[in-house]
Image 1 (spheres, helix red, strand yellow):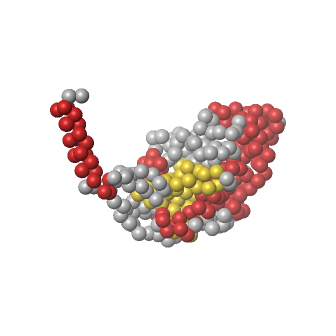
Image 2: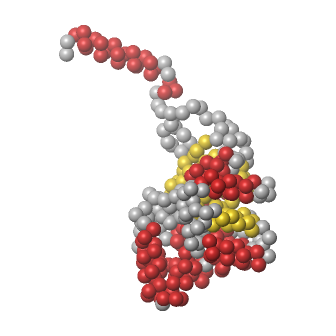
Length: 308
């Protein structure tokens, strides 16, 4: 290397060293409370933010995030439960709910979308209970500025199945909403009743495979279908009516073929004495593809009417 070029390189290196040395805060990238490297403005106590975490569930750590609402709080919280396999995550809905002053937790069940473990419906029910328990931990509630006594479940498709099962098992969940909820155990039970066990399980497994199972691990369509048939007596929506008849509920339906089952569930709740059941129908597909703003408005209106 010729001397002038060498001197220029050394001078540049010294200048860079001096620049770094005069900025101690940037000698290492800032690190968030969860260990992620961030290049961002300083954190303000009342600013809206996103926090990521891994939630323990039966030996695995579920990938999760919380949209934290602005303000000191404590904020009410929504747990947003995704479907099967979960291509539509409804995170636009999560953002809208946060703007309305709610924290929103989104997570991936064991064995789904990169969360370790084996996917199953029983595991997903356990995972939802683990997510609820996580938000109720005093240190977590403080860090997320949320009120652990005001947790609402909102589930889409299979997430609606998880919502119904989990709310029924947890009397402290006072309100829940379903968006085109899939009574998957009821569907499996009906197929077995009309076609026989072998044909019914085959039809159910074909339907599950058609939904796309690439994001799921540790399971097969047939195994999941058999699981639904085995647990059908305890998992169908009608079997949960008695446990849910004292809750505030929102049942949203679309033109996806699930409306009849969902409206029958809402009617059964009302017949059992529940006077706080609301229903909304939107003319759209299962993903609410062309009714996203209308879906958001329906959910926000319902949340705004819940007791403070």
